[in-house]
Length: 341
Image 1 (cartoon, rainbow, N blue to C red):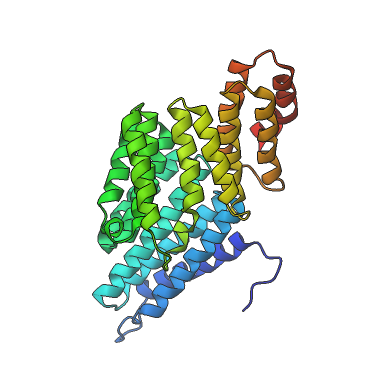
Image 2: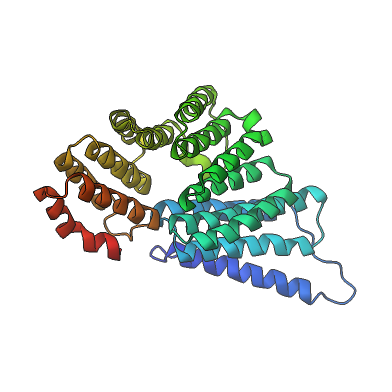
């Protein structure tokens, strides 16, 4: 049945997955006498994968939020529940890979919403499921999210270790795009640890690998990564290394390449640009730039990561230009909107 045009996508997905998961559990718990469990096959895996693509669309539209997390966990429950049915070993591994991807989606939703304890629990479960799947893409995705989570928690050595684990996955040896992402994650961790040489070396590796990457079918979750995202991560590395002019240039390159549909990514990079401008002493220009982040997210709640970055900008503003009129005006205009979003 077609989805009604105005129905909320998150509600539809949550209902679909919860219904399917409930049906699966019921079927496993109450088998008909003398019958074998229904066989599970490729069509079931493809259906689950289609659901993951829809969750990626929802994430791009709304960012991390509770409905996305619940829908992802329901999808994971369905994938695990299907293990109770008759299936080949290959199908079982593909079901575990789908469950790992759904659980990683839930973890990412919590990371974006800054619900980090919940994210940690989901990441740990996703690592278990990815191990059972023996799927190198699922494993790489979980290590990527582990590196992100460690960065948000301030556990930078763990973040570097997770990025290095991502680099060791088989998919990074076969596909330079995944290798580039893993090196870029390592660069951010090195930068936050103050290791300039390692950070710049990792960025160089990421650039070299991305230059070798070819257009090919890949999972929808990694569609965000390409030259624009690498420029954005380079900006983060440069600002952390105390190189705001280079950070500003990298952020400009990122914004020039980021598709308009990635408005959360554009808002985050816009704030990174504003911070780079502020750290070069241009408070007025930085405040003007920061306004674009609010405009980009107009009509939607601000994700937790974005609110934290706004807090970083405001603290820098108070530190670097505490008496400037523009600083007081920024606070008067945006503080309540940012803190209550």
